[in-house]
Every structure is written in C-alpha cells, then in structure tokens.
Length: 270
Image (cartoon, rainbow, N blue to C red; front, side, top):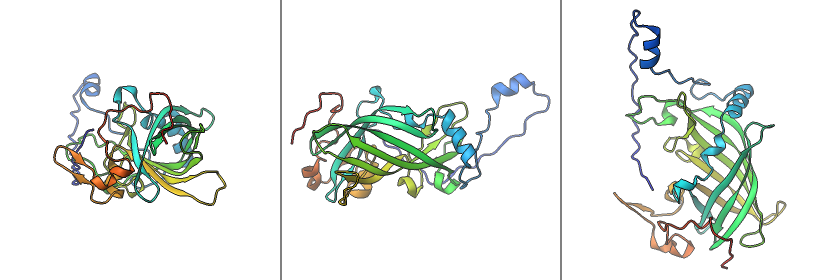
C-alpha cells in the first residue's frame, strides 16, 4: 500500500516565450502540449462534451481490478452502523457502446467472512472540472493536467445465494485527470468533498430487495481512505498503519494480509 503526502499549496506555472526562429519540428519535440481543458474551472461539461469525453475515454478502467496489483486496488469500506468491513473487487467492466458513461460490471465483495459475486451497472451522469482549490495540485506537478469529477449512480446485485442476498445502490463519484496524450488517471488526493478528498467513492445503501423499506448504509473507496474518515481513532504511523483493535471484531484485524480472496472458489463461512 502506497502512501503520499498531500501538499496543499498549488504551484505556479511560468510559461517561457517560444523563439520565433525555432524550427517547427524541433518545437514539437521540445515543447510539451498544454492540457486541453474541456471546461472552465468549476464548470459542468455540457451534455455534448460529456458524451464525447465518455465515448472516447473508458473511465471504467479506473475501478476495474488489475491482476498485477494484487490486493492494492481492492476497495475497502464499511457496512452498517458498527463499521463492519466491506471489500469490493470489480473483475469485469464493460462500456455500453450505445450509452456513453454506462458500464456493465461484475465482481465479488466480501463481508461477514462471506465472498459473494455480484453483477450490475454504473452510470456516470455528470462531469465537472474542479477548481484549482478543489484539485489540490502537488507542488512538484509541473504538468497540472485539468482534474475532473464524474458523478452518477450504481446498482449492484448479489448473483449468488451465499453471503448477503440483495442489492447495493447509491451514488458514485471519482476524481480523474487527463494528461495530454495519456490515459485518464485517478486523482487520489484532492480537496473535493464529493469524493471525500480524492479518488473513487461509492456511497449508498444495501437492501435485501429493491423494494424493501429497510436500508443499511454502505460506503467503500480505494485503499484505506474511507476508514480514516469513518472509523474513530484510526491511527496512521510514519511507515505503517494501525487500526484500532476494537474494530478487529468487525473485520479490520487482518488489513495487511496478502489474501486474494476473490480469486478462489466462493464459499460461505457463516
């Protein structure tokens, strides 16, 4: 698990004038193209701009699990009112060619010791460019590619009779940047409240049936960021992280175990 220190002070970009006598071919090789901003800071992209962006950029890759990552990109969060640990892995993310921003997804989640497969959809309905203050650029980030926040909804239904039986639903938000000439990347440290300060956030509830009146809150995020905001007295050391021992009873006793639980056979242990 990697940790980074967030530097709140934004850097100033100083643009140098380009010599008129410089050959065009040399100019292209030495001068990096400026990031193409799709909207002014703080502005919401128009429907046309949003659809064009989502059609050419597969943001679904930002939450799809990469096998080479091991346990590093497992999403962690809390289920219910006692801080019960909830873990998610999206193993399949397929963009809907007919509806830009809609993704058909599948994967597994673990809660109460049970590993349960799920299927569902995620739909990104709005994209907004973050302001400089919200973006929280690193001091040494000389490129400062524009950072955007995409928000939408999700519906994920357990596709097995083991474990929890029902459906997760709610709101999804992710901060991402578009470096010129490169694929989109998660912006994991921002000052954006919509994502709880960066990255990817699923915030919703669990219902045993879609029409059930009783709903249980559920929230999860990449890495351990969500636990720092939900669990009280969650301590971060200089070189390691420690979870308050009182949360061991709700699944937080083995955070650092190299356990690829989604790769094995689905077994209900409860």
